[in-house]
Length: 103
Image 1 (cartoon, rainbow, N blue to C red):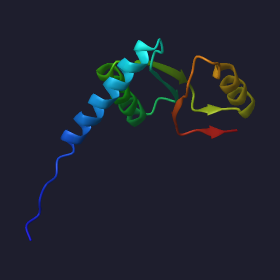
Image 2 (image 1 turned 60 degrees about the vertical axis):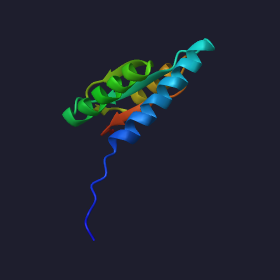
Image 3 (image 1 turned 90 degrees about the vertical axis):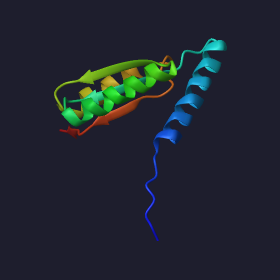
């Protein structure tokens, strides 16, 4: 049996098209689709991942916001207080990207 190389690109483009349609639908109802990412630290791999998420948002018509915390070592009280302060109604959800040690 010969191996067949499959390309994911057609599926990716189909998903992007669907997301763009969903974003347009939300905008027509007065809802601004958005992705907010909380990045703790400055790990280069995480920054690359987040740049790709921002690019995707631009392609499908969603806004993007990056909330970055430095350094990656935070005390527990600060972390919990900060999370509580940003969890306000304007966020439908947050994507957290971090390698965090809470002390």
